[in-house]
Length: 334
Ligand SMILES: NC(=O)c1ccc[n+]([C@@H]2O[C@H](COP(=O)([O-])OP(=O)(O)OC[C@H]3O[C@@H](n4cnc5c(N)ncnc54)[C@H](O)[C@@H]3O)[C@@H](O)[C@H]2O)c1
Image (cartoon, rainbow, N blue to C red; front, side, top):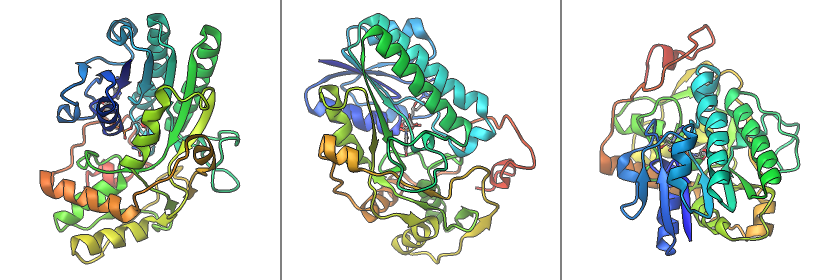
């Protein structure tokens, strides 16, 4: 079986490709290298440096693959209200072009990585898949638009589709010099340089974090699993619902520095309470996370220590610099 993974130089895409290759699957993939890292691409993966918005090149690269995992995206929720063009282009536009290429190439199954941002603010947590999406920012809106396009085109053209909703994945290979995302990696990179971490708002916003291994294992099973076709499935833990303050305290203790965060203004549209029910994943996939939040934090700290701390790279344009744009980005405080 040939499987095509988009965003294969990125965090999730590269770990997924590794897992599929370990199972004996033939894996090809692409990445535009907008993010990601060439060192992440598995040696046994056929690699194409292509932008997913290039439909014709994508069709050629997908070739005779039977499954496409679409992991490529500009996964920048907080930034998306300040760089909406870049974020929506690499989510909605990239998805429709990838899907069109996949259908034309004769692919049988399309697996899409959506995001918890699809839920936005709901009246209750945890979020369940039957809730009507109420995304609060261009990132979530772009993911919901991409989901709608997938349902529509797959149903018309007879492809199996699966929409997975991962959330706050943490682990080795996650970028830690990107000032626009990955709160844990940013804080660890700063603390390991004996610098103070920044916390948006009062730090009492709550999240559940997923260890990368606990996401990849069930994700890799979606190539053939029959029960998941036509389903939206949350893929992440619903336990250890922690505050950002708690995460910062655990990291400081692990690294051995005093906890001394700088509190800055809350980011616009940031959802205060966000976690997803894993009941459906447990029912359909026997989902059972094995790695704790402390395991994930430990992996990140070890990874950064191994690679060395890095200065932050402000590699994406801030399309909108207004009063609402966080000072951390306008004044490049990280
Ligand atoms: N990491 C998380 O916590 C998380 C949570 C929820 C959802 N997701 C989703 O999972 C997927 C993978 O996320 P990740 O954390 O691995 O991100 P990542 O940034 O590490 O990987 C994404 C990759 O996509 C590539 N890319 C971006 N636009 C592209 C384009 N137009 N064409 C080709 N390649 C392109 C980037 O270069 C990058 O290597 C994304 O769809 C993201 O929205 C991630």
